[in-house]
Length: 287
Image (tube, rainbow, N blue to C red; front, side, top):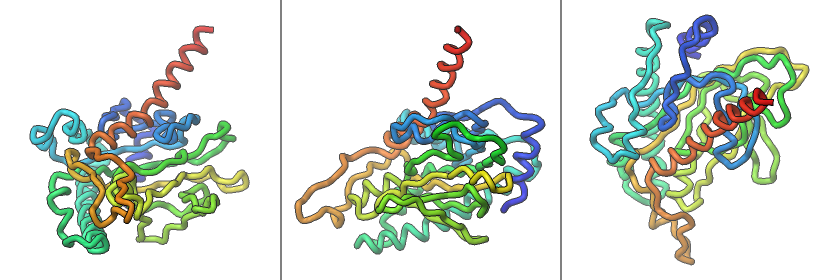
């Protein structure tokens, strides 16, 4: 793993900055108890056992080039002062992941029967997001239904995951209903299809239902660090079914939607869990 990510969370345990998440983009800090991602699927659960730092394109000038809704996905990044090389390393990682994702997109375009550069003008102002996630060691029984990350699909095109292979890791749901442990090899990635590619391909490629499990009771308690790159097109791109993916019945399964409309709608649902928790705490205090 990239050493500054570990140093970042270690230092944050002593001096926590305020929760500066920009809800519209998922950028900034999420501390423990701040969100429950299963809410994005309409499922009510306790908060996820994780904390994270997210950032996107380091170019706030892009907001002036799009409509107000899309501009929310270009919110300025917040960068901590320490570790001193944190921003430099993370921006370099983001740039490298953009390159990897673009290569995969060219292969996907070929598979869809379009020119391999079909996606180029739809990602030249992309709103991809990188999140560094710490799943702290679980030292006490979780609440009923509580996970490190609740059951969900990702919102965008593709997600590239590089994470520690420890108990309480990534699981994907098989079509037969079974949950399968995913063991990520060192220096390798797991790639999940997201909702927008599912819509674009008319379910030719289906978004991956997944979660991050709680370690079994007999596991040695340990932290887990995960680096996640969520690939998103330009926020004002309209996602409409590819002609090559329309079946003989002529049915397009999803109505057209912009990237920003879909992404922000899902993100707001996940963030509502925090508001619900605050309301519940207020009700408890009142009694």
